[in-house]
Amino acid sequence: MVDADRARDTPPMGWNSWDCYGTTVTEAEVLANARAMAECLLPHGWDTVVVDIAWSDPSARAHGYNEDAPLTIDAYGRLQPAVNRFPSAADGAGFGPLAAQVHELGLRFGVHVMRGIPRVASAADLPVLGTEVTAREIADPAPAARCSWNPDMDGLDHTHPAARVYYDSCVAQLASWGVDFIKADDMLWPYRAADIEAYARAIERSGRQIELSLSPGRDLSSTRLEHLRTNATMWRVCDDLWDRWEDVEANFARFARWAPLASPAGWPDGDMLPLGHIGIRAERGTDRHSLLTSAEQHTLMTLWVMARSPLMMGGDLPTSSPETIALLTRGAVLDVLRESTGNREVFREGPVVLWVADSTARPRRYAAVFHLGDSPTVVDLDGADVGARGDEQVTDLWADEQLTWSAGRLLLDVPAHGCRLLSLDAA
Image (cartoon, rainbow, N blue to C red):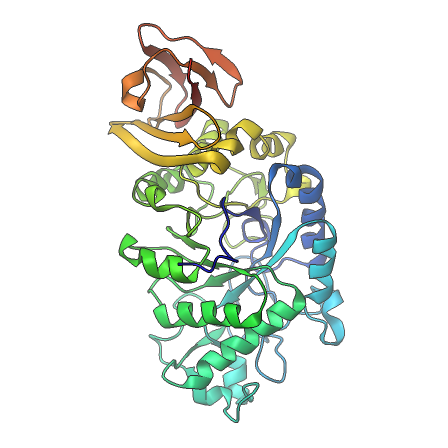
């Protein structure tokens, strides 16, 4: 099982720079989002700020990756923040000063890493810290060992013992900077068991409590569950999710498989929330506010909390709308994430999907009624279909509205691609 020091009772909640800034986020933008999180979201449990991919590339650009990027590395082939984007990293300080500022706000600091060793380190044949081995000896440049979508890294030859020593040195450096959360990419598609184990071991050897998130989750099978729980805090169950209804809808089937397996031993992750102001300098699309309708945004949040997925906000917090912030801070909805158990899909017929969960804090059941169809509808909900007797006190948690049973049934207006999230309290 995952180390007790790294287990958490509830899924991680935070902000990630990818959906709004892609490969190009700067120190000033990270701090602006950290301050907004501390002011508006921290009281509601959002506590982690994550710098996503390519923070070592001084030439990073929107809409993709740079071939032969001049990555900033140290004398041992370990990635360093690009100083033109993270000026506090000058003189070898790394992310230490930025992490300290994030910690002063009462938040946790996270970074993205890629599997493997930088190709620039292999090309320069730099030494591996603590060994007499060089980068070229542990690198695996074969196409099957390299990432299929990012050109920055060689794979590692895990038959060589120094490969793990290299990961140890990288994570020890991250720990020395005060990193609390690592998003490790190119780990799950295809499934890279040796890299996952080596990274988990490196975190244990670092002496710091660091949560490990694994990505991306394309084609991930639940047969991997025990290995994932042993090594990681959370793991993606899908590829990148964007502000398209088809992306959200596809996760219904995935969460139906994975939600019953979510626990403090590890959290299946439906990816970042493409809400608010996104696409500023992102990989996909132009500067925009989320293209999901209001109903679709409520469905996304409801499905994620009912599935007990980690919540990682993808939009730029300082420039997102008050409506977006309200969506993220609805306490009664976030209670479902924190206090529910037995979360599962119980009904799927045509466009109607029902989920239920119980509360660990009070005699309460939660029920989510989803309508995946393209037109508004009225769902005639039989209480027995969500395990209710029909005499409970019913509250719509988004509208804060009391509902009334009629012969054990509820008539619910549900918009296209929308939902109703209900608490059912014992009479």
